[in-house]
Image 1 (cartoon, helix red, strand yellow):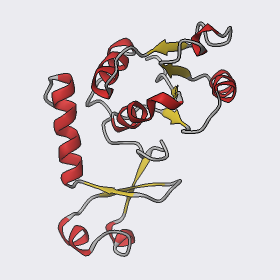
Image 2 (cartoon, one colour):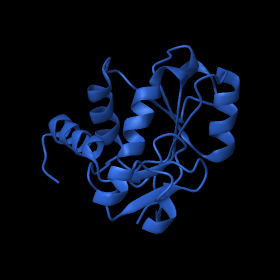
Image 3 (cartoon, rainbow, N blue to C red):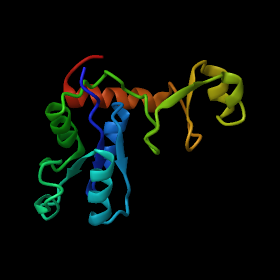
Image 4 (cartoon, rainbow, N blue to C red):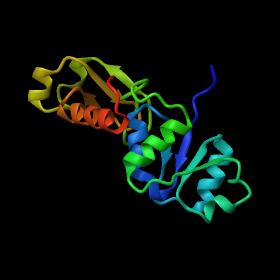
Length: 158
C-alpha cells in the first residue's frame, strides 16, 4: 500500500487545508509563510505543494512537486484534490486536529471535565484531543454539519 501523500498548502488555500485535515489528510499550512520558505519546507519534508500561484509553480524545485488548484471555492478545490490524490472522503474523516494537523488521540472522559462545557460533558461519552494544542473534540452539532457538507460536496453517503 503506498504511503499517504502529505501536503503543504500555500497562503491562498487556508480553507482547503482545513477541509483536507477534516478528511484526515496531513496538510501543513502557515498563514504567513514566504514562497521561499514554503518551497524549502516542501522539499525538505517531502510534501506536495498545493497552490493557486502561477509564479510559484515556475520555480525549478516546484515543477515536479505541486498540484495547481484550479477551483475558486473550497468545495471545488476539495473535490479536485481528492480526485487527483484518490482521497476517500470518509476514509479517515475527523482524525486530525483542524488547527494543528496532529493526529487526534482518544482521551478519557474524566480528563476533559474542566475543558468542555458542562452540557457537553454530561451528554457526550467519547472525546479526542490534540497532543500539540490541547483542543478537545467530540460528536456535536459542528461535527454533524461538517459531515453533511462532506456528503453534499462529494455526493456520497458515509
